[in-house]
Structure formats: C-alpha cells, structure tokens
Amino acid sequence: MLLAKGIFGGKYLYTVDTMENTSLVTIEAEDRIRHHEDELRAIIETIPAFIATALPDGSVDFVTPSWLHYMGLSREQWLNWGWMTVVHPEDLARVVGKWRTALADGEPVEQTLRVRQANGEYRWILGRTVPLRDEQGNIVKWYGTLVDIEDMKHTEDRLRRTLDSVKKLRDRLYKENISLREEISKVSMFEEIVGASPVLKAVLAHVTKVAPTDSTVFITGETGTGKELVARAIHKRSRRASRAFVSINCAAIPASLIASELFGHEKGAFTGAHQRRLGRFELAEGGTIFLDEIGELPLETQAVLLRVLQENELERVGGHKTIRTNVRVIAATNRDLSDAITGGTFRIDLFYRLNVFPIHMPSLRERKEDIPMLVEYFVDRYASKLGKKIRNTGKKSLELLRAYHWPGNIRELQNVIERSVILCDSGDFAVDGSWLIPGPGQTQPANMRFADKLVTQEKGLIEAALAECRGRVSGPLGAAAKLGIPPSTLESKIKSLNISKHLFKAP
Image 1 (cartoon, rainbow, N blue to C red):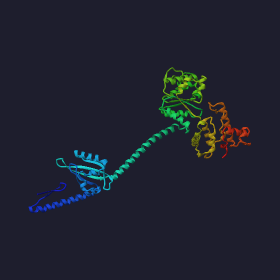
Image 2 (spheres, rainbow, N blue to C red):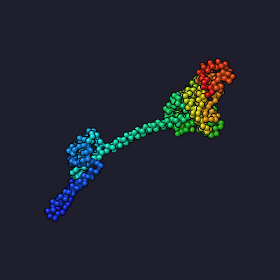
Image 3 (cartoon, rainbow, N blue to C red):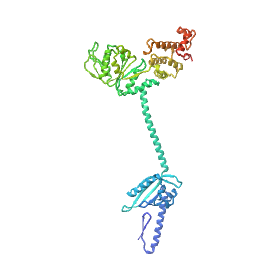
C-alpha cells in the first residue's frame, strides 16, 4: 500500500501486487500530482484576484506571479515580510498592526490599503486573509486574496462627495424652506399690507417682534392707513391665533351703550335689556380684542377699561359678579391723545396702560414709493372680482397717483382704483385726474399746521385743474381760466409748489 500526498494535503491510495511495480506506481502518482498542480495554478491565474499564502508566523511563502508582475517585484523581494516596502507610509502602521493582531488571536482579517505599483503609482487594494487549521485546531497556513479596488474607491469617493453635496444641498434647502415658510407666513400675515418702503418695513418688523408676546399694543396713524390690518396681523402671528379676534369701533357706538357693548350686561340692567348679553371682552376670551378709535371712549368707560387692563377682571353692566378675563388688547386712534389728555377727555393713566408697545402707521404720503405696488394689487383684486383683464397701467395715471397727496390714505387710493376698474373698458388702466380732489368728508392730517394745510389744498386744486386741462395753463381751456387766476400767477404758483405740469399733458 502506497500513500502519496499532494501539495494541498490530498491523499492518493494505490494497491500494488509486487514490489517490482512500486516504481511504476510512484511515477504515475507524481505525474498526477503535477497535473493537479498545473490545473490548480491555471485556475488560480484565472481568478480576478491575487493569491498569497503565509506561514503561521505571518511570513509570506507564496504569491501568484500575476501579483509580482502587477507590483514589479521579484518573488524574493515580496516573500517573508518584504511586502511592507510597497505599502503606503500612511497605511503601514495600521496594516501591520492589524495583521499582527490577527496572528495573535487567529481570527480572519480584512482591510484596505494603498500599495505602490511598478510605475510608482499607489492604488487601493482590498486584502482578505483567513487561517487554515489542522485537526488539533493549530494554524498551519494563512490564505489571502488581494483585489484591486482603485476604481471602486474612486466611485465610492465620488459617491461620498455626491452625498456630501446632497447633504449640503438638503441642509441649504432645509434652511431655505424655513426661510420660505417664514416669508410665506409673513406674506399671509401681511396679505393686505402691501409695500416695500423703509417706513413700512420698520412697522412690519415691530409687528413681527411684538406679535408672539401678550403685550398691549397701541397703534396710531391717520384714518385709512390700515391700523386694523396691523392689529389682525399681530393676532394672526400670536399664540392666540386659533382664538377669536374681536374688533369694535368705539366711535361707531353711542356713548350710552359702549360699556354694555364692551363688558356685557345683565337682564334688566337698563331699559330694553330683556336678557343677559355677553360683551366683546367675553366673546374674545383667550383671543384678541381690537379697540379702534379708543380716543372716543367716554370717561366713565375709560375707568372700567383701566380696571380690566390692570386686574384682568370685569363686571357686566347691572351685575355684581366679578369675571376673570384673558384677552389681549390692541388699541388704535387717529387722534393726537395728548390734546385730549390736556383737555381732560382722556385719562392719562389709561394712556400709559395702552401705550406699552406703540406702533405708528405711516401715511401714504410718507411711503409714496409703495403706490405702484398698491395700484397693481388693487387693480388685480378688483379686475378679478369683475372678471376683467387689465394688462397695463398708464404711465400718466401712475404719475398722477404718485403726485397726489392722499388725505384719505390707502382707503382713498383703494376707492379710486375700484372706481377706475369699474369704468375701465379696455386692457389699459387709467385714472380720471378730476377725482383726485379732497371731498367734503376728507380732512387733512390732524398734525398738519394750518399754513401747511393751505399749501396742500392749493397744490391739490392746481394739480386737479392741470389734470382736467391736460397740462394746459393759459387759454380759454387752460387751468388758469378754470381756477379764475391770471396765467402768470398760475405759472408762478406751479413753480413755487414744485408741480411738474408735464405730468398732466396728454400722451
């Protein structure tokens, strides 16, 4: 019986009849071993990876020729621990340390490293090494594969850079989304407060600051400037936005009924009080109450309101039960309350209670740069309501609107635009200049000096006459004849009032 062992430990068993046949059998066995070795080498060479083996102490004893060719090294240079000479200096300590750890604990090891090729360039390699043990569990050999992953590494790096870019883009979009949501919130919050002038931006900045608080806000400004819109914007931006916003015009309710309207009344409190009625403060519980034209409140009602602001409690008219309130107060006036305080018609202590966070709404004269935007907004609004398509706003009309002093502020502008849209029969928007004259119900700003009022009124009359006469000054159809003054006098006034008569000429 003959036992023959192959290079990988394979056993070949042969039975012989005579000793004379032993040599022949041995030769056949050696031929078969060489044949299997050749087949194995051929298979190894076709594997898309480089193969290496190492002894139990970690010294390399075999490597495929293809790897030596890839590295440009001789077998002698690579075997044992010679392979360390081609590992990238930045990777060497890590790779050797990990290999020694694997030798110590006998566990498989996998790691990536950069190795220097024959041309001197470094490429990324993935190495995997596993131990082969005998029947007693002792390591008899280490088998390893080496795979070039340079292209995969580049792809991985590109993917990582792409992911980094995506992450940065995502973060940027997230921030932009937050910013956009804030802008959308601002747009929706100020949906009817149109404009981009510095004075208006300053107002909206104050609104944004005070809205999240529960502070009392006191809004001042001429009639028609949009004080209630600001009050609604504050409420909408506040923590009370989900609760009621109750508005009351103190000037529109008779003095004898204002207390009942604000604080409610009990049945039988006065003639006609047939049942108990809740006041506006109770209706606004948890929300906001807007007291417009606060300067018109009677003194006795001011005293009750002062208590509500100080103590957060009230009593209905004709009642004796104290009712706790949780209401934010926003007040507004178009009057100069300092005169009312001096005259004794408005309580100074109530004024200080209301004037916690003052906001002044600018007149349209102070923000004339917003007029084109306001015109566009109102034209679109009313044209849409009437089913009209208005594409253009005449330059002359826009100049007329910008030149006018707007004693009625935005409310007056809104009325003029609505009237113009109703009368518009084409796609071009135009305004009749004769409308831009203060009517009997329109007053000049309360804080304007008498001399200034005269100048403003005179300028308005001249501009209206020029608009009606299409910029003509003299002649029977000129503005001078219409106003009943000599043309030379009108020319002098036009110059002194800084009026551009060219704005009123027909195109």
